[in-house]
Length: 443
Ligand SMILES: [Zn+2]
Image (cartoon, rainbow, N blue to C red; front, side, top):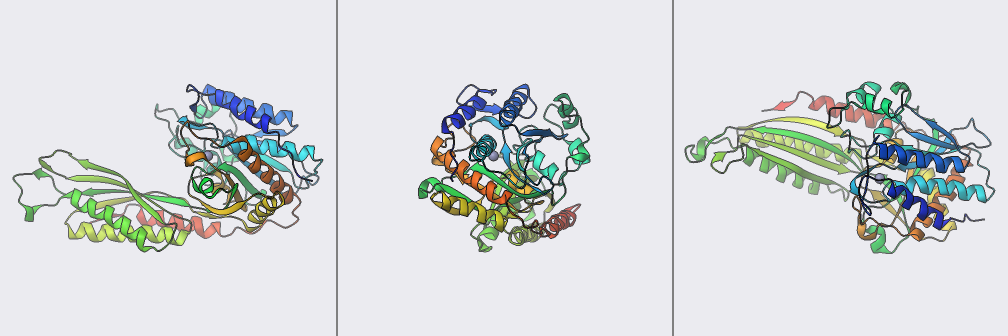
């Protein structure tokens, strides 16, 4: 028996949530713990109640909507995504993975399916970094990557701290209780719009994500010596911009030379001081984003960029302070989850292809505590984070059906959770990188 999706219901629910917005339609703005976002949460809880799901909310506002399985003591299978939306974005990013997951549960209920492991739909708090400057707040805290102390440090641009803001929103529990242990979930699978054009161009219904790339970000402050553009002769110069320019070129070369097809490196920020035409640049601030699906390649690029910074600044008689802003580990998807998604797509005769996810998703962090997978549905023109974002009701229904069957399969899985000890060296490596870079200043 195959699941039947209420396409009209799905469309109506997505459209209804889109009206809960701080921007005029078709744009959507829903920022963490604003009255609008809280209304969005109430809407999601209402949908979950209609399905008879048990609702739990943690101290950070992650919402867990649970369909109890016949063996409630076994680790549950989870799915879900987010409903917060950056200013003036669209109505599908994240939402498809929350409302779609609820509809997947409904379809399984209608089939008379009885899960063995419980199924949980998670609505994660603040996948978008809009308010507190850090994305995936809920999933990072849930997997133990952000401690209660880290969370208390966070301030929004008005200086309000996360701890007071979440308490005002009604989430008053102990922040230390948010983290869940490895093994708490048997598996996690997130349905999401692709946010890129690959599926649409290939005319394929579904992307089965094989791995999730993750960035490391370096901030570099290059210091030279300023001076009058007419007065200081060329041999005496210590031009910070010229050193920084060489660094930016080295970043490009290092990504190309890594020979990984997924390696990308970008110098996206380049600020020159004092920034006057008749003044030799004395200081430049650069921020460099490096990504790959493999930790070794990604960290190899970070190390190579550091070495290049050292060589260039020495040769140019300048100095550089290097700070590692973040180094989240990339994730390889769990084999059992990928197999369940592929099997579901085949049962449904839906075309599918393996894809690498290149954006941040809550799944990246869930991969630290359980085997994880993602299902992508096409995005029209690859548009996302803008009002033109669009995925047709039929395309969404394909993703929801596939999710339903994959959840069903995983909920019957008897196997013990696959060891994810790989996350240990991964976090270790990120920490080592941090330590190596901390207080480091190359001269
Ligand atoms: Zn998203």
